[in-house]
Length: 414
View (tube, rainbow, N blue to C red):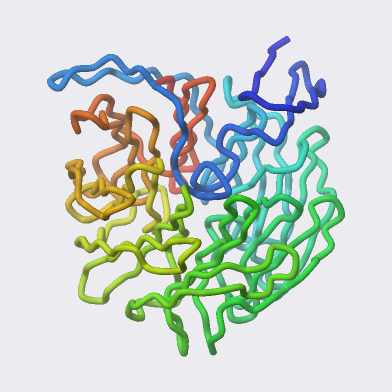
């Protein structure tokens, strides 16, 4: 019998399944985009990679899995790796549940009539929640029992040809997701029965931007948008029980298509957000959650590439001390309190949100694989040929690279 162990947790529920034990709790390894509902991209562990400035440590491949093309961002819940796959051409959409340590497929679940499916999220016992987009009936949120592989319930809402690659976000009492006919609505769904508790417009416009998801920090719920048709860019807070807008900050940016392409990273009562300029730059802003002021702004050349096997993303990362921004000339490390530049990690054709640990920085690129940088020296400590969406297992010290183009997941010990 293989015993899988989670991170430190207060309450666990262990259930025997196919010769292995799934341990479910409210403490997970990497349950959402960005590693947490606050979307920081930070996981407070030491990787202890042995390397010097002139020698790169070789990675150890543990397993690979060939699933299907069109894979989403992977998440980790109770030592299972969760990844969805979908095809706009066929409408075929599936959830794959794998043993994160061995790659063994536990379940392959048909999600039914979804042309685009975001990553699964954890948050309540042994359930996973998947936000999908259907061709005719708007958006779905489906609850899947990871023990049986059954779909427990499906919630439905309106939408108009959107994409939501960040998936939903678990909160204290509800699962939150973006949607609406014009993409500016905030949904709250009961995690146990699928009832839509509220559906509130938080971005007022004739046509808002898709490609965002709510962010939850200290049981507070935040929303964001790039300028759409008839709207400004915005970051704001909504009441977690009603969806009513509590306050918002307009973001000075320029229209750059109908998608937001970023989510905030929030830590220590500071939200890090991004806005785009049509002439090729990107601006990052620090917003105080108590003062509602923009504390500082930082500009850099916009990364124009999309990592092969991933999706367009301009989300920042933070460990609370520094912020990390992926720009055209590398990853910029900036002091969170002041906006002062610390260093630039040279990273050709890198894109997407970096993963930050206590001692390393992990990023994928278009054409140059995936790299792990030593945060202190700035040197590359480990290099992987594959690129794609990244997820990090904190206790097993494993990195997962999910390539949506080839439909392959690579698991490395680091």
